[in-house]
Every structure is written in C-alpha cells, then in structure tokens.
Image (cartoon, rainbow, N blue to C red):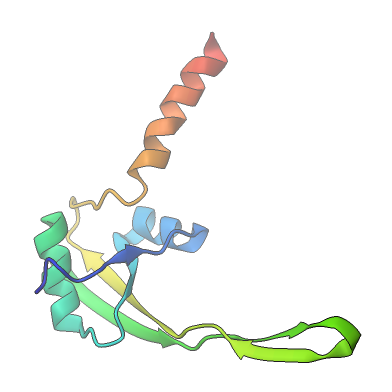
Length: 112
C-alpha cells in the first residue's frame, strides 16, 4: 500500500526554502493518511531515511462568485492534508530537480 499512496509535492517558495535549509519536504497526501503510512510511503518511493513527519489539515476557502443581475453563487474549495517530511541530512528528494537543472543551462546561454 505504501508505494501506491499518492504523494503530490507542494511546489511553492516556502516549500523550496524549507527543502534547501532544513531538508523538510511538503507533500499533499490523502485525507485518510497518518504519519506512519506517509513515512513508509516516502521511504519506499524516494529511498530516503525519514526522521519525522508533521501533518496538518487545511480547510478549503469559501468563495463567492457573482452571476448576472447580482445573483450570488457560494461554494468552497476542497480540504487538503499536508505532510511536512524531514529527511536525514545528506538525503534529497528530487522535487525541485528540474528547476535546478535549468539554471546552469540558462547561465551557459547567457555567457555565449
């Protein structure tokens, strides 16, 4: 079951900063996931050693849209569960690897 759990990485400036500074990676996980299953899934999928897992539930925002003649339509976004996974020093997860690989290529183009 651990390899089949969907781990969607959270790509943001804050998540990138945490991954560079403290080896903490942020994933969006299913609502029924717990710390143990998340740790097992990360270790199985990325072959790293997990030190700790923190989980938070984020409630979906309530949004209001307006239609013709002032009619309001109210709805909300889905709730999500985020897992903050701390891995051992020296281990990395290639979440932001494609962005880092593009930087040297862009620098080479600029020098020519």
